[in-house]
Figure (cartoon, helix red, strand yellow):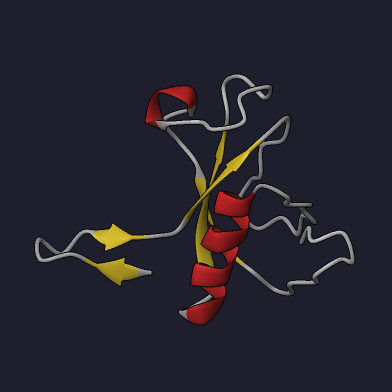
Length: 88
């Protein structure tokens, strides 16, 4: 998390396929896309907070802002486990 000059808070963004994460729920997630792994790494390097937003079309491999729902959940990463196949 960081803040820009206007005071807005900026979080790393993790688009989610076929899942919606709600506040106060512990939810394991499996992440494999390189951009998503970079978002996790950015969150881990700061305060472990990340913005989770569901994709409108789960088949979209490179979602842009129009491919995401307008509301998401700010989450705290409790644990990050790297798997042998490169996913997290």
